[in-house]
Length: 364
Image (cartoon, rainbow, N blue to C red):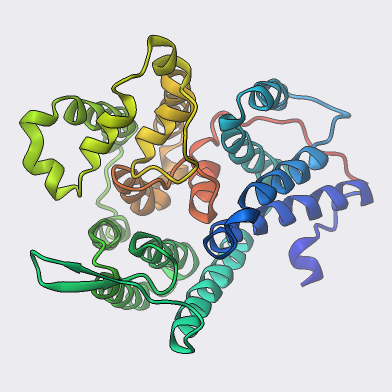
């Protein structure tokens, strides 16, 4: 275990920095779980994570991305809504800088998500947590949240687990991954009624098979590179034309109306740099959350970074395509790209790899 979290070639100073990074990453992994049950600790955890990351930065040497992070931190201290963006970027940078193996990150996240799902289930079975039921009139069926407070939160746990399983076992145990993923997706859908994770899981399996059969062509990188741009445009075009898309809005559980409601009073400034929010709850669209948090400027940063990595490093990231595309699609209805979580951190470790360039850290 000591070798798992320590890197033998680091100085004692950098071993301490590495420990802070691991603390920040673990807190990111469990932050949502804790906030579901102890809402008052949500903001406290955010600041603890940010402080750990600030303390982990080696200020004895600089590179372009680190300078960018320090400037961005000053902006985030003024516009506090940007602190979650800074946390995500800094954590991704530090993980990449210290060369923390992705398999280690995946294993820790997999253990934590499994424990979260276990505690939720046991809490319901023991009567400690309330398993709230919601009846859907159209289908005359009930959905449950396993004590998370929201069925979509519960479905999100299953979805995280499936993505982490892809990273952990799909390379050497393909059939096992497919069987477990389908089983988890069915259990998730039967329990929560959430369609997005179920559809995205099927997409993960389909794209995995294409990848295993080497059927994802090099030319597809140009289409994949512009997917975030397409989804940004699609999200707001459909919402701004709500009257012509009422049926789609109903299928999307009112999300188009919600997007229109939150953005209809946006000024030009709000569209460019984002706007303050009256609630800190996750928005039911990653693309809405990015625009609301940092406006068009933040969306341009992420889309350009995504496109650059996809086009210039397609061979390196090809094995991640089966989770990258489903996460982009899932972002249409869920906030899974911007807020620091197990899967968003891994997603941006991959997709920011073309931008993060650093000098070697000090060694003995």
